Image 1 (spheres, rainbow, N blue to C red):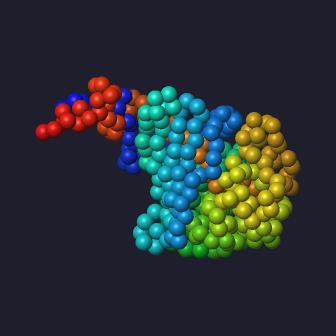
Image 2 (cartoon, rainbow, N blue to C red):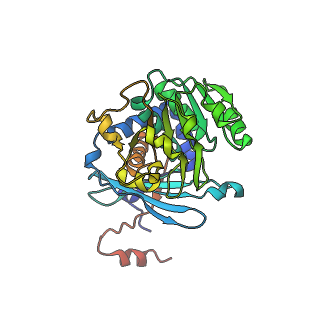
Image 3 (cartoon, rainbow, N blue to C red):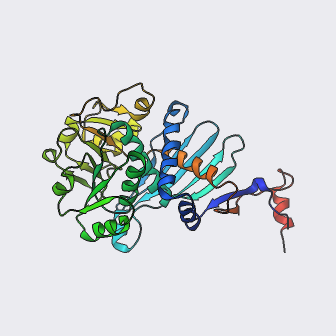
Length: 348
């Protein structure tokens, strides 16, 4: 039987190998690395093909494709969001991603992205906080203590020097899980019984809940001047976490407005509600935080370029390692025109 050529073999990073890679690099170092890759791609934002994610909604959840290209590489992520899964012992979000060479169209990486999405989401949050959070912010309220919470906390610690996190979830078991997982990782953890208690003394307020509904996790009177809100839970039509009044008092920053207006907190607002695109802040074209009393709000929905950055990082990081296996994914006949002949010659 004809053996596939190296060009026909696609590196695949499994869940097990992704976990091995994280422990090899160190999770905080990996979060910093991912933030650097994401920031670098935000700085060349104008080079990318951009489109809101392609979503297929059902009564129980959503399945989405998130594609983009910088002209040299093409990447996409497959991701689902099914809040009901938790009650069935399944993940709310699962994902995988692919990176390809634009010149040949050949895939160059296939990888799990359930874990990687949690890492890149956290890295993005902390990278944005560098530009928007109050100076010397060291305490965060983490409201919603599910699968993202530990990653968000450690990214803020690794990238902006967070020292303390105050945890709240309507499910005490989720809070206990998060507190247990963060034990011994160099950050002070306070378990709180209400969201109001969680935000006491916090300069950063992160909301990350799973229920697919219009919700009010933070009411207008809960949010005082000078904080940075990292709103990452509202990520599809019909799902929000913040009272409309908070948006009216905040300077709102977004990834890609055409997507955020469909999926983010600003779906509650008029179509001409003013927002600032993050890439312009990172390039210095627009201002981020301008004074100590300002409420900054990152209306985060997750955008394909962040996944592209994560795929680039994994492609680069696994070179000359054993944290992947080669998959025989691509038919590679000796004569490109003789695909049928290749099939016939494989007959037992």
